[in-house]
Amino acid sequence: MDPARAKRLLQQHLRTDELLGVATVPIDLDALAITPTPTSTSKPTPKPSPERSEGPDQTRLHKPTASTPTPRLTAAPPPVRLDPADPKPDALRKLREALGQDQRVLDKLMPGTQLVFGEGDPDAEIMFIGEGAGEDEARTGRPFVGRAGQLLDNMIKAMGLEREQVYITNCVHFRPPGNRTPTPDEIDLGWPYMIGQVQVVQPQAIVALGGTSAKALLNTSTGITRLRGRWHTFDAVQNQQGEPFPLMPTFHPAFLLRSYTRDNRAKVWADLVEVLKKLGKTPPKR
Ligand code: URA
Image 1: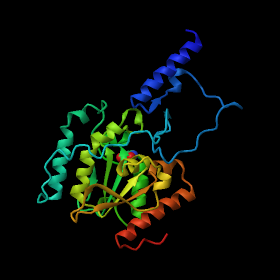
Image 2: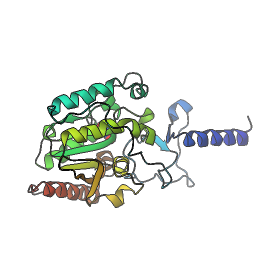
Image 3: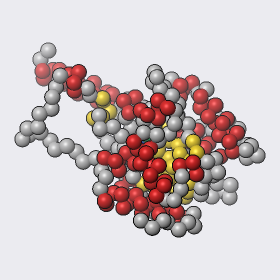
Image 4: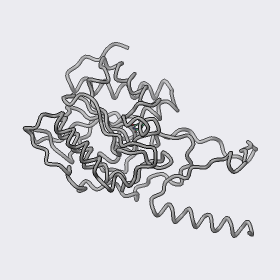
């Protein structure tokens, strides 16, 4: 085929995908037998973006913009009746079972992957909310168990806590195909289960890990770099006192792994110190 026509067709195809919400295309350079050769005209490798937490193997077609629809806060309430008299472990089990029977969610599961519900102390004071399961999480069915999860464990330890003392979950409870950023529709699918977990656990502070999670939870298109470092409120549901949940956004551990600078580490630590202070705890010296 004429290369110009092939290029035009490919562009049309990608544009249609983009309109359908496909944000990334996995490119297997080995399969294409293309070896990228640095040339004087080749673009410099882009710096890791704090908006994007995962996958060096992914090529972004577009970054979320102000026009990217944010998740609907009106998405369905938890699909199970959450009786405040239910012991928290029972309520969480009910939510997990409902997730496991939600056909719209099950339809999203890629072969060989599992649903990834939240885990941790049902009475946790702090709830960490990431964007969606990665490869290790979808294989094991547990949130944040891969490299980013190990760094999260270390962050929790640095706060003077153990992983078992906090609650960890995601906006999306399955692995988006190709490890791409979850689409707003995928976030909508996870929304009832995510807010259900917030309602049951009643954390004193929520930490939104990364831009995707922070934007979804705060229903904003503002980037993580501007959101982090100050308190916001998660008001899709209220706590038992009828107040919104305090929410601190911070960089995603996967971003930190890829951009492990003193400055980024200091910023994340400063955010975590704010969380400890909110709970009236003295931050360990570092
Ligand atoms: N990244 C996330 O956002 N969540 C996980 O559970 C793992 C990696």
